[in-house]
Length: 215
Image (cartoon, rainbow, N blue to C red):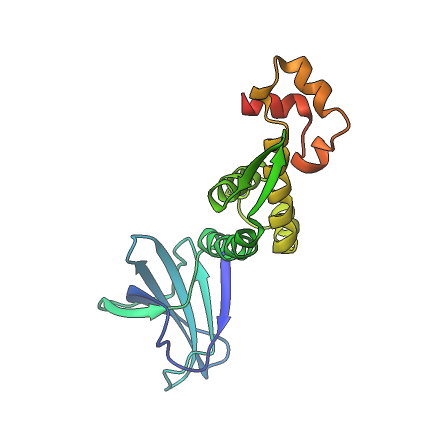
């Protein structure tokens, strides 16, 4: 894996790391320097950084990152220093992106609390129920799974509008309250009651599988 960034100023923000320059390479353009460094994050993770700099300048033109330590022509015995980097690992970026997306869903979801009538009784769909069903919904879509990039299916999921997902979750809550399996004598009675009730469209699987999941 190689990640490239471009910068024109010294990093003043980002994550704290311990950094040690361990070597340099010759380059065809003698006005540039390739500097290789090892970066260790505060959580123990490690990455290797290649900085491209103009000769006689500390200005970084480009940075490249490698998971495996690149070989160098000329070794350096640099000292460890505490600095910062804007580098983020793919799985961390994935988690950060998903966390932001999930929060957008929650922001819409908390506005969908409501009271419904089930069997002539009032039942309240509250925040706790909505959030619980959101976790079920995300689990059904393998939201927390990470298998590296590209994740085509997950990208498609993240391209959806958060308020649409919030609405789907609220619909699932209402469906479960109206057709809770435990209120039926047996599975056959439940399947008869939910026949034609858009179970697949609401949950992504059939009434029989939903019954098994909830019982």
